[in-house]
Length: 106
Image 1 (cartoon, rainbow, N blue to C red):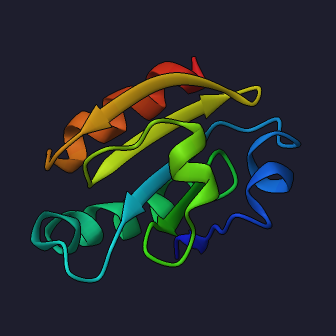
Image 2 (cartoon, rainbow, N blue to C red):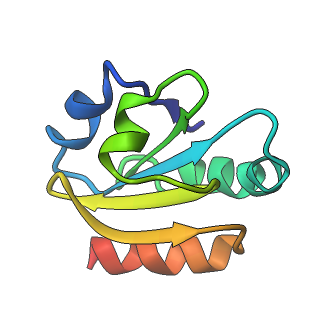
């Protein structure tokens, strides 16, 4: 299951993790966010132990989205060693996201 990421735990999860981290920026009212949610959960299961997959609700957490210039959702940021390695905006298939995660895993 995807973990809940917040303004308060973001740095400890993303910056202090040797594994790649995928953060899904979303909101309850966002249709495309709800549409991509099953793919995010699937990735969380498939990559368990190899990567961290989390979701950050932009309505409940404003600091991190501002820090990374999130203007539209869903936005997915891929982190490696605490740095943004890739970014995906909008609804895409699980295969696109898997390819990006696989690239980070080498």
